[in-house]
Length: 199
Image 1: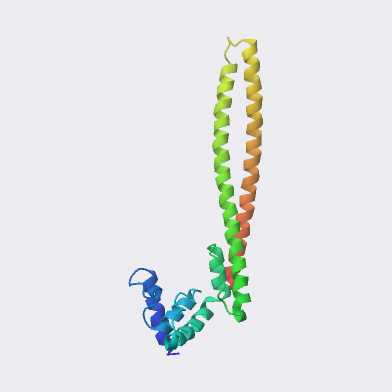
Image 2 (image 1 turned 90 degrees about the horizontal axis):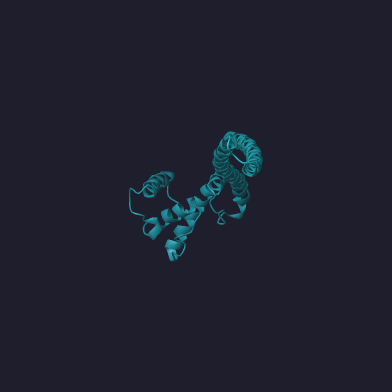
């Protein structure tokens, strides 16, 4: 392979490509095959692996260099955190390292999804609780009317008991969810801190 500075220039080119500052040459498999291979390798893919002859040999040389940069525990963790599909392109010698990172990151990703879902549930239940409070206020206002007959009063009392039961249930569910969210967020903070120290 050429010098490391050659790959340094290629990394800069890759950055520009990914940020829309140049044409997407690697995707079209146009250019230096060794650099195309390196680019594919650093992304854990083999988009240009159909090159043949000397170009194919050069591509594989670049790809082998790039894949070693991709198949790290840190890269696996980052992919897992994003919920990306786990790569199956890593060579056997580094698969375990990449997989360890991916599994740790994916656990963080799933926990964050759970937290997000619970927070949405809290919001929905809080909205429902507001509805119950409003309905209960209306019932109590009806009960306070002096001209309410006995049959209507009995119905309003029954409605108020049902609403208070619903209110109690919703408060209990919201309190439980808030406790779970706090626990999961603390778990996430500890995990992320541990990962930050590791990397």
